[in-house]
Amino acid sequence: MGLIKFRILQNSNPKKCVIRVINERKMAEVLIEQPLNLTESAVTQLQRIKDEQKIPDDHGLRVGVKGGGCSGFSYVLGFDLKNEKDQEYDINGLTVFMEKSHAIYLLGIEIDWHEGLNNRGFVFNNPNAKDTCGCGTSFSA
Image (tube, rainbow, N blue to C red; front, side, top):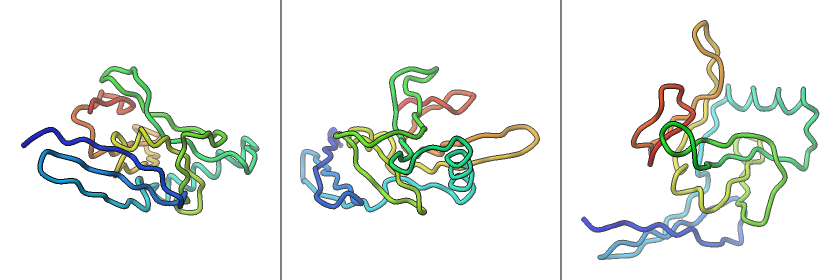
């Protein structure tokens, strides 16, 4: 099987993302209405943080990746203003910003909140990760 390339297309509907998948035999476009999932417990925790920190309503949740970490990429999760490279989504009542170029690393990811005796925090379940570090905050793709 040949190399599969992804290209994120500009879309007039800010709640949908179109990804063009190109390989040596065919080209297909896939419409993704929600590129990631936030569990109910994650949304509850994020709303609590937003309220406690008095984050303005014009800020949304930024989900992304950046180079670094034990495995090559680290996750970005925080509240921020929308910028020109962002796609905007409404996920479980929360405004989410994600740069188009990050979709190939984050497509299908589930962000959850765990609270237990041994751990407490956000958990990233990323189907695109080939390897993750022990703490779960970085991955390779």
